[in-house]
Image 1 (tube, one colour):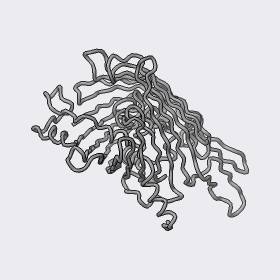
Image 2: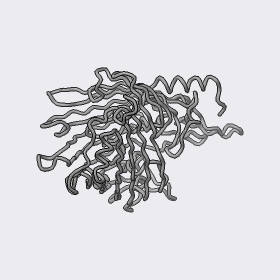
Image 3: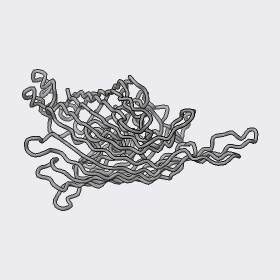
Amino acid sequence: MKTTKTTRTFRTCALFLLVALRATSVHAQGPAPDYSGGFLKRSTMTGDWGGSRNEMAKKGVTFDFNLFQTEVGVVEGGTNSKAEYGGRGDFILKVDTGKAGLWPGGFLQIEGEVNYGSGANSNTGALIPVNTNQLFPVPGKIGSAAIPSVQFLQFLSPHFGVLVGKLYVTSADDNEFAHGKYGKGDTQFMNLAFNFNPATLFAAPYTPIGGGLVILPNKNPEAAIFNALVFSATGTASKAGFDNFEHDNLSVSLEGRVRTHFFGKTGHQDVGYLHSNREFSSLDQRLSLDPGTQLVEKKSGSWVVFYNFDQYLYEPSKGKGFGIFGRFAISDGNPNFLHHVYSLGFGGKGVGAKRPNDSYGFGGFYIDISNPTLTTPFGSRRFLRDETGGEAYYSLAVTPWAHLSPHLQVVRGARRQTLTVPPRNIDTAVVLGLRLGLTF
């Protein structure tokens, strides 16, 4: 695509003026982590590296490596009962330029990812993956490796910061009980419908190139954060994506998250709007017998409004207790076929004084599908149905750095029939999963 003067100007303004998705976590690194302690008590398997790891952390440099392994299989219904083993590893490097003695207010974050195996996502008949962890860094590509996130945030005042780089959208739509540490199905629920709102993925690639600014009304990102974002509407984790940042291939996002204190307990309210100006294939296609008319109908632009909340009902200490959560989204319905998305559930962190690092949750979701329609001279055909499902899990902290969690999911997928000849109906899938997360 030819780069015009308008495009170059738009790039420059957008990268300077708009917000990053992961600004909260980058800014709020907080006190330096402590890697010391005995093998079964410390926060990471490899510990303090002879004292150098804690020393680097005090100077604003942290390096963490995680490995997540899953065994997932359909035990009833679906399209295939084969159990699938897979895994994903990631490393995250963070640098606080102030603590490092360089200059104040700068934060660099780099993430790398690799996956292997498979995750049973194609065996259920569902559109929404039951194993979110296996999607990254490149969906559908086994053995992929990439650096999906390279971003730099510079605060110009205690209330205002500017960030540029390669971002990942799963860090948005955060939720205390239904997002996990990175929103990738690694520490809480496995099903994508609970990790973040799936309706937003239609107009937002996993790791687009973009940038922007973040506003902290009272200097504390944990209390309130507002952002507005521009990024490329297409892109993959395995490519830098600068060529995708064009004036007719952009998405804009506005999001605000506020901490609440209903019932004297911690909660959060999060609302956002996402719009893309790229061209999509329309859900309504008409096939004519006239020569020269077999073109795929297009539709320009797509939008979605999303909302989520979490609320502690019991909170004996900060970050511990149990509560409820919910998500909702409404989209244009065409071209975004995920027209309405709902999820509601219950989650907890800590089980008494003796199990402070355990977590658990259960919930259900419903997705109103705008059914793609093909109209031909011989009639019309609809391909999908609405999708519903539920999941329950318990994450057992074997040590602070090793978590083993069994999962049970029941999913009635949007696909009605298999693609085999002759086709057969796809029944509700019962899915069992086991996940082991290790922090090195």
